[in-house]
Length: 252
Ligand SMILES: [Zn+2]
Image 1 (tube, helix red, strand yellow):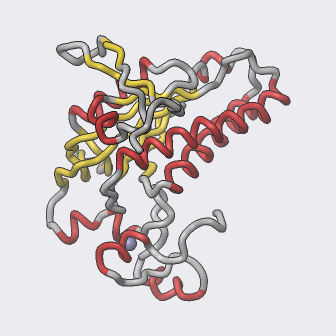
Image 2: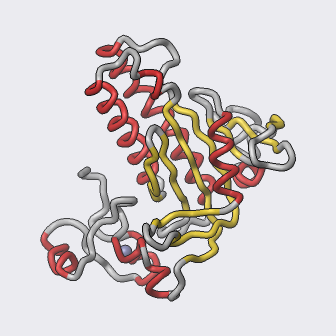
């Protein structure tokens, strides 16, 4: 899909120091045994995707991760002034820009849900700084979409502020694996996931909102001024931090 994509599986290399070729002539024997680039992260392989079920013999595992949601604000109402092919190309462009930003930071594009996406960082590629990687991905997503949206808007006659992205993410313990009996679905579940989804839902267009756990892990890059939010489904209000580019005081 893209020349920036890795030639060998980054996950297998990290865990096993074994080069699983994903692209080019060396990938042919691997493909013959069913190892191919994962659709959720083309720099990893289909084996890594389900490694925990095969190696750990568990359907799901508890891992420390960062879960990110992004959505295209006003997409549903845009159908009133955009043609069907414009709606489709907008959504394709949104998925592409999000995917590239996520994959560049070794995250997993876990789901595309209508006009929203969900990403997980720290699986299958392990990252000690997964919150920081998610932050970089979120900022890059906003920058990339800013450029792409301007290009699209030339042809579409978009309202100002229409079809901008809201992003929210949270870090902590999640249950990751296959859930469901009849329809098996690889995903993360837990409070961290719900909080990330709620943070995204209250983010303004163009904004990135993160939890305190994220802010604590990226303290030099995110302002310490939080705002209390009452999030649906959570018992008490929680503090969220605006994580757009930050030029505040930094520790030297
Ligand atoms: Zn792999």
